Length: 555
Image (cartoon, rainbow, N blue to C red; front, side):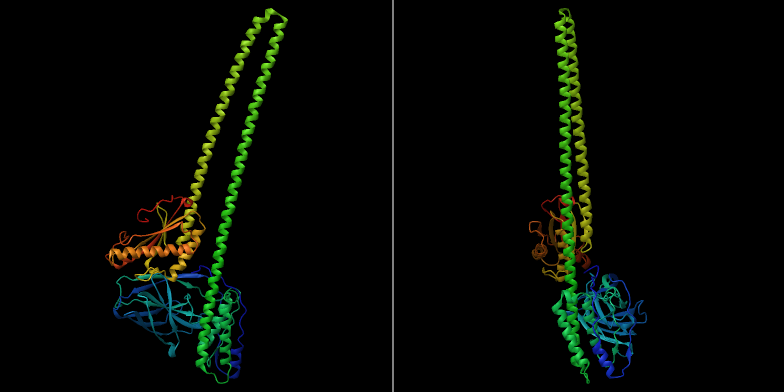
């Protein structure tokens, strides 16, 4: 789920059909508030969830209004039956959703799982005396219930305009320990891009609400780039809206076909918006991967340049040292030649000076020996200094390399932790996936799991040389052989999906451990849920941990 919404400014769609219909009759209309200005991002919120026991019968929940609508209230009867859970809800004191902004036309009832997955259960239509009723079903077993204001009925993510939350009563049946479900909300104004003029919608009493939801959905889809990134679906939504406009402008309005085509336009526009958002996310991820690759190439080029410069400096120093040694040798030879010439001249002038010359020669030879010894000592000292300097430089380079590996390890851990729970260990980084990413007793990945793994794969591709070991674990429910097979299949599914997303098959392996390595007690449901997991051990020289064969648990 994206952390920042990329919104593309669009041109406001014509409201000619609404204007024509309004001009035909003098109906009372309700103008909405001026265009709101809000930040466009995704925020989080927590609410209590209840785990309803399978086929445990009916129980009741209350609803309470929060800061935005404190007088709102409600009650729900939750009936756990075979195969599904039925929810009968009734709400009171609900204000018109347009109170919160031009784009809000309806209310939606959501079920929120403990992992934060939001499921659209249905539209809450405002009835007489500001009361509403809704009868829906869900296949979730543990969930919380909230009501939000939305621009149309087919939204996939709740807005943060939360008007009602469930309240667990003392007599509510379920697990004795309530779970805090943390989920993401689209902030108010998130459906309107910065600088986009969202003209107020004028509600006409003779036209159904679905007609205005369709117009809202189409404008929002256009503002999020659907024309560019989901052109075929968007154009189909435009055609459906044109049909709705045609029904709306007739002298005698037949609401049944108008509602049908309007709802289809809403769904088609929402599909186009979702495709556009996904494609823009893919473009952003591709750009991030390219930027990472470019940065790595540039870093390698800089390292190569530094190595070449160092080698050139060493070569220049060696040449200078050789030139100095040659100059010293030439000086010694010249001195010896002068001494020999003086000795020959002295011997030619007088035989008496032979003894003196011999003595002088002996002194000269002694001086030469001392000079040679001094030169040899100096050269030995220089070699020792050079070796010591080289050792110090090698130690500094090793320390710098370890520092860089530690920084990359921390960066990789932070990136992975934003998607799945990640912790550091002596073996490497351990990325944990809970069993809710698989259907019970199955090993096929749910869409939410594939989305998270796709992001994980994108991150891992930016760090060449990593080794990924996938381990599957189960609780002690069922036989050992069945649990061993299930853990192997789940680990294999994760491994195969990472390979399909571009991770090298030589870099990823999988192994099942069955119920042999629990991390919590199997005596209660909470402990068993923790034991049903898949873990990814990420290691490698690039992040400062050696790549070794797995001989046991990934921990």
